[in-house]
Length: 152
Image (tube, rainbow, N blue to C red; front, top):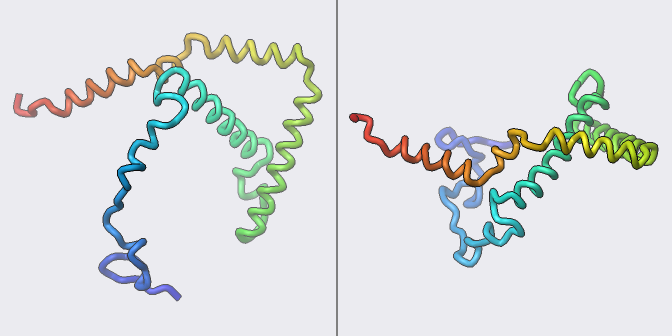
């Protein structure tokens, strides 16, 4: 049984790890964010980051809509273990469906889908959203607004 301290809203047995107020990062670890393959917000980074994210979000949407995982009435199981097992079986079924569809598609159909997506992306809002200059201007304008004297 857990007991909670009224003052801190933390378990009475919480150790230093759970109750510390700050974290110290060693100096040799500070530059790790700059060691990624592509520089943050550059076009190469955006292509890599958003392509992967888009694929995952698309799969999640399909998983929820087609297989009904987002609807509790379509997955009538109780308990975490049963829910995890149902989710695993649904992921296997969804992956199987994707592989089956891939092998049933002709190269011409795949190329047509690719061209359609390419046209949709060309000149779209996503280019502006992933443009580093655009975001630098936005950040500068926000900083300028924040530093203005409200009395003026």
